[in-house]
Image (tube, rainbow, N blue to C red; front, side):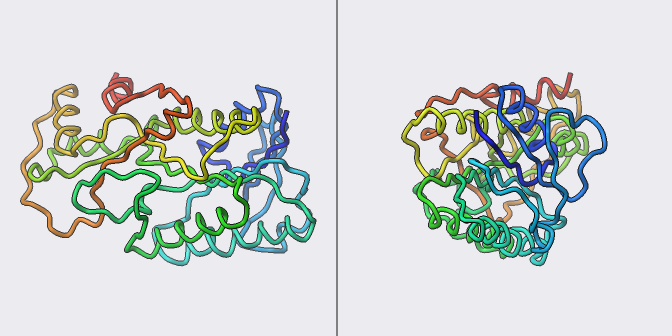
Length: 280
């Protein structure tokens, strides 16, 4: 069994922690404000990774580190605090203690800057135009350069209970671009956890792995098709057609072949499988 540190125990990190603990792994969660209850199977360390002094007493004998953090806001300083300052603080503390755990860095498909509906995979150019995604891309490369066994996982749009933005959009009879199609990509919250558990198990089994995996379901679909399907099943008015938006900053289709070739099987293979549960 492995000794695991999960940096950032939000919804996904906490569920991952419980899942790994149930499988016999020793799990520590690094969090600014740990819960005061429901912590029987998780050891918590209180700290803010953007403050180096908070990490001085952090245990160092971890074999694996999951980096699963969300910025406080969608602005430059928040991303810099996590993906530059915070990441460097963690790397430095492990280096000073002479240890080199394997990292799973949870990234985002926002690192792709493609805008014309192209298919993208792990080998596609990842040069985002917006500064926030640039910080994520910079952190990816830093960890991949640090150790060839470190792995980057790029999640597409995460949805699930409590992440119901598209359901709200469908209810509002929103204007949606229809032609040319504006493609969307997504992954159910439970598949996020499933992928992260699966990759750890592959690593522990000694399976040869790549440094980057794109984690998105089998069916990139246009926003028009998704919202139209949702309105039909929610008995809402159909969406309105929006004039072609020439200023889109991202429009691509994510190819998950590498992850599936490794053996992962999606619990929710497309948006219909996941959203029908949320609608019910």
